[in-house]
Structures are given as structure tokens and as C-alpha cells.
Amino acid sequence: MKSKFLDKERELTVKIVVGVADMKVSNDPESMIITYSLGSCIGISIYDSVARVGGLLHYMLPESSIDPVKAEKNPYMFADKGIPLLFKAAYQLGAKKQRVRIVVAGGAQILDQQGFFNIGKRNHMAMRKMFWKNNVMVNYEDVGGNVNRTMKLAVKDGQSWLKVSGKGEFEV
Amino acid sequence: MKDIKQIIKGIDKLNPIPQVANKVMALAEDPDSSMSQISEIISYDQALTANVLKACNSAYFGLPKKVDSVHQAIVYLGMDQVVDLVLLGSGASNFKTKQEGYDLDPGELWKYSVASAILARELAEKKGSEKTHMIFTASLLKDIGKVVLNQYVADSFEKIQFLVSKHGFTFREAEKAVIGIDHAELGGMVAKKWEFPSQMVTLIENHHLHEEPGRGDFENCIIYLADTLCMMMGIGVGSDGLAYRFHKEALDFLGLTQVDVQEIIAGFGEKLSQVEDLISIH
Image (cartoon, rainbow over the protein chains, first blue to last red):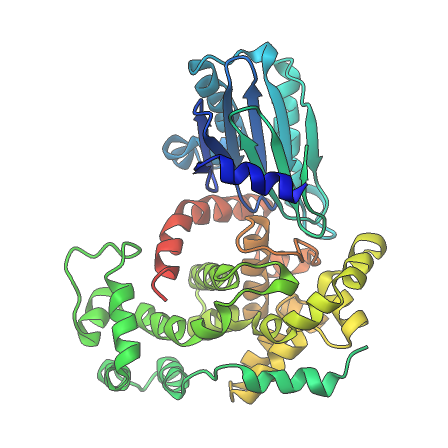
């Protein structure tokens, strides 16, 4: 799988890096959208193969009510603010809700991290709640555990990869 | 099990922390020392001075005016910040290489170390600690053992990973079980060799709080919490992932709730790009 990705990377020249608490969308077929090192954060990538539009969000926390001022400044930090903005940005480039393929990764936890302190799990729950309310289905998910994850999405055809600590890189 | 003595010998291959850093740290913790004493010691070391000034003038601090002397740096940023910059400048060389065993590219371990040191210092200040430099330094150097153990982790990675994924071991516990020594223990040995104060040796040794007494020790809990939060934020996390244990007692001891933890994450998340800017200097 890795070599396949490397071939792909050579072919695709524009690397769009999504930082922590950040979101990017693109319809440039030459680009690869990447987010590194998800930890307890969640990465959501969406891709519409008809419009050939891709987007990726990397959020840190479930709810913006924890700090409305920061949420105003950087809505991508929070699931409840960032997720709608990811979809809106992709729609603006022509993506349609019923066509998007969704990949989700991250939400890891420290061993024995129970209850409210389990922010990875809460990040995942916040997303699930929103998706359920809005009839959105996730196509592939690699969530939880004690691993670190990196996500990549090729805008040309929606091909996606995950790199998981201890497991290496694979296509999803 | 590997030959432990051989592994420990690897400590000698590290670049030792310059004496000036030890001196600056000792002076900074001494209530009778003066600003000019510290400024003088730093100024004797040209490379260190250049590094401190470069960091002062970086976007991280966003100073309105260019700083061109250590004395000026102390006036603008305060003594504490300048001391931290000295420590940053002194610690970098060992951490910047690629760590294959931990699947960390060049610079990633350093980024993780600096981020957790900055966060630890912030938490310590918030809680009114008087030992912020010790906390900062211990946090910065806590993973030095990884640099020594790296090759052995690479050689035994499958066995370590098996214990982590199938038997609920933490990565540190698995290192100990497979190799016979773990990165925290080795880190303590490095700190001893570098003649750090005994409290700092303990802090580095127990930064994962696996020894229970640490869970009731302020400095130890702060270093642990900063490390844990950085892992959760995915900063410089490698093949060991988040496979370390959560000790709620540490948060209880510090009087922090889950809301506080989220606020800390939100606050630090905002600063991450500035931290990266600071790291690129050293």
C-alpha cells in the first residue's frame, strides 16, 4: 500500500496540510489533503466523486460552549462548529451531501482514560450525534484505541489513506 | 533481554548539556541572585547568546522592537522567559535526529519536548509554582531516554507492540519487559550523569507517574499532565501512540476538572503554530 501512495504522491504535486484545529477544502485535482497526528482529535474527510471536491477537518474538542470566544476565533477547534463549516465549504465548491464519501479517524485515548476525561471518545460521540441528526452516514471509520493517526485524501479521485502508529499506512 | 550495561553506555554518546545551562538554572532558582549575574553568564557564551536573541526576535514573542543584547532581552521578556530560552538552546542537539524506533522524523521529538515544556510551565505558573524552571527543564528533557533507547526499540518493536496491543501494557512497561530497561529509567540516569538536582532526576524518571508517590507531588503531576495533554493533542506522537496510563489522581491533586482540561487544550491549541515558530529556531 505504501508504495502505491508514494507513487501517488509523486504524481500529485500540491500538498495541502490541515493543521490542528483547522479545515481545508479543494477541487484542485493535483492536490493531496493531509492531516498529521490526530491523537484524541478527530479528522473527518469528505469527498464528492462527481464534483471532485474534497475536504478535511481536524478538530480538538467536542463542544464550543467550553470557550465561545475561542470558538468565534477558530471554529475548527470544535466539533459542533467545525463539522457544519466543513460541509458548507465543500458544498460551495459543488459537492452534494448525498454523494459525499466520509472517512473518520482519530479519537484515541490514553490507557484507562475513563468518563468525562476521555476526550477522544467524547469527540467521536459529538460527531456521531450530529451525523445522526442530519442523516449523514460514515463510509469508513478508524477510531479509538491508543494509537496515533494521519489521514490523506487525493482530490483527484478521492483515494484515501490512513497511517496508524504500530500498523503503518494503508488505503481505506 | 538486552545487555543493559551496553545500553547504559549509550548515554555517553549524547551531547552533554552545557555547564552554562546548569549554572543559569541554579541562579534562576536562587532568590539571592541578580539579573546582571544571569545576563553576564549567558553573554559569555556567544552561540547561546545568538540563539537566545534569535528566539526573542521570533514571531512567537512578537516584540515591537528588535532585541540585540541579553540584558535587553531580560528587560523585554523577563528573566523567566530568557532562562527558558537558554535551556531550550542547550537541550536541542540531542533531540533533533530521527528516532526510527519511535517512528519520529527529525525534529518531531524536539517539537514534542518543547511543546510539553511550554505547557508544563504555563500550568505551573497558573498554580503558583516557584519551581517553574525545574518543571520546564524536566519536561523538556524527560524523553532523553528515548534517544538512548531508540535503536533497541527499533530492534524489538514487534515484541513491544505485541505486549501493548494484546496484553494492555503501556509502551514503557513493554520496553521494560522486552528490553530490560525503559526510556524513563534511562532518562533518570542521563539526568544523574549530567549532575542535575536529585528532584529533577526523579521527575524525569517518573514522568509517566508509574511510581505512586509522584501522584501526590506537585511538580511531578504538572509534568505528567503536560505530557499527557500533548499526547492527546497528537503533538510529536510516534509509534508509542497514546499507550501510557491515565492517572486521574494527578488531576485531582492539582484540583483540575475535565472542564479545566478542555480549556487548557483549547488555550494551547491556539498557540501551537507559534510554538512551531519557536522550535524552528533551535
